[in-house]
Structure formats: structure tokens, C-alpha cells
Length: 377
Image (cartoon, rainbow, N blue to C red; front, side, top):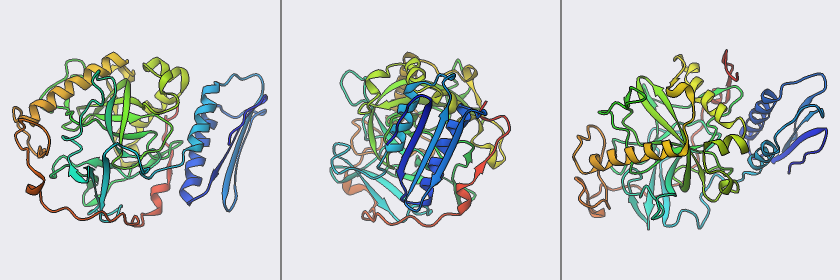
């Protein structure tokens, strides 16, 4: 699938299933071109055909390029699935109601066939040592639909965010395509809007804790992954603290080598910088200013990130017990003992059957690239 030799060459080949795959490959290749700019002695080519695309990039001997970067490109090109494998997620499955890309679409998570709340009913920790955590994938890598756990609805299904009556899609800020990672949330966590963090000097954003999973496999909406913590960034979004925890799927081939934030830079050079850039500029095409960061954009280490997760877990415990006013957050659940709004399955409103319908068409402008002055520095 991918080969390297000296003088340095990257070549990739990927099955073309839709026009979007050409965009994906072009975006990723453009990122490589940015990281290793052209010179008279370097060459980049993208060659589509009716069924495949191939890309190659050559660099002379005089430039040193991390082999781990090559491996990352190889692993991303060979990613093959965005649908639930038959035996994945232990007892967790998804129930899709209505067509994706519509206001009515919802993805419910089930355990043993019974709908549950991904916010409240899935344990945060996947092992007794609390070193492996569960995360819920809301937005698979390279996609644009801004999916999120609905805090307000009973059982908190995943839906597409809406603004002024229209579905929200993130724009493609060159050289990126959609989200850079499998993006989602930790269950049983909550960023308390009543508490100002002593270091960020900003209140919580009233959401579950956000997670960026950097492994090789593209997830699917509603997937429950087992991950380990590597670090955390503190985005300051509209005067709120919006933590972004960096994690990796424990099943990923690189997981044994990634144990703290410095390992990410060692084995996936450029990814943390690109992550910072993405969050800084992604709202600019919609007419909003750059986002700001606490800690001058530094990605804090595993210990710091673990402490943030525990703080947000404790905030959730107060929320679910009724010790903190929930406001517009639905705390209905099926499993949490001594919680204020625990119910049995027969007390839930009816939920439609799994439909698994084809997505509704979306405007072609969603695939447009936006070129941001000052990006990719």
C-alpha cells in the first residue's frame, strides 16, 4: 500500500468509493506538502483514475523525515471502516432513527438491546485500575457533520447540532478535511458551568468532556471505544473552558508506544501542532474570530489530563445525584444508583426502530476548502 525509499518517496493507493475519498486523499496529501514544502528538487503528484487514486511525493537525500510520519500516512491510507463491526463494543450497539443529515436523525446507544444514555449509563472507566476509559465517538475522523450528545433530550441521543434552524457542518480549513481525529466525549463527565477553573480563569462549558482519539481506525457515530489518556489542551471558547483530551484507542498498533504527551510528538510529529491549529481557526469561515487557548496552546501531560478527567467526573456525580441544579441537562438514566432521575425501561417514551437509512443529500459547498491567512504556521 505504501512504500518508501531514498531519495524519499511516499506513494499511496486507496479504493475510490465516492468523490469524498478523493477530497480526503487530496487534503491529507496537501498537508504533507505543507509540512515538507516544495523545492526545485521535490515533487508531489496526485493521480486519480476512475476507480483509484494514487499519490506520490519525493524528497532529496538532504532532508530528514521521520519514518513514524510515513507509518502514520500508511495507516491512514489503509483505514477501511466507518461501520460497526459485528463483534465490536462488547454489548453496546447503535439504533439509528430517521435519515442522517436531517433534523430528525438520532443515534441511540443500546446495551443488550435496551436504549441507554451515553452521557450517564456508560461507565467512565473500563477497568478497575482506572487506566482505560470508555469514550463515545460523536464525529468520525474526516467527516464534517457536527454531531453531539444531546444534553437536553431524554437518554441523550447523538444528533447533529443546529443553528438558526440549519444543520451545522464544520468547514474545511486548508489543508485539513473535516475533523482530524475521532472526536467524541467521555461518559459520566461534565464541565460545570458554575465553576471557574483556577488556571484557565473561565467557567465550564456545560458539556461532557471532549475527546480527540488519534488512532488509525476511523470510528462511527455511537461507537464506544476503550482508550487511554495522553494529554489535554484547554480551548477558551466564548469565555468558557473547553477541555480537549488527547487519547488513543488501546487496540491501536501504536498504543503500546504512546503513554504521555511527549510520545505523541515523537511518534506522530506535527499532530499536536495541527490539532492546535484546527481548533484555533475552524470557526473563522463562519465569520467568527480565532479561538484562544489557555497555557499558550500547550498540550498538558497525562497526569494533568487525568486530574481534569477526575474533576469533571466528580462534577458529573454531583449533577446526577441532584446536588447541582441540572438546568436544561436531562439526567434521566437507567443504571446509576441513588441518582435523582433513574427510571426503568418501561418508563421511557417510545423510540423508533433501527432504520439505518441512507443519508440525505448535502450541499456540495460542504466539501469546499477555505484558505485562512496565518494558518499552517
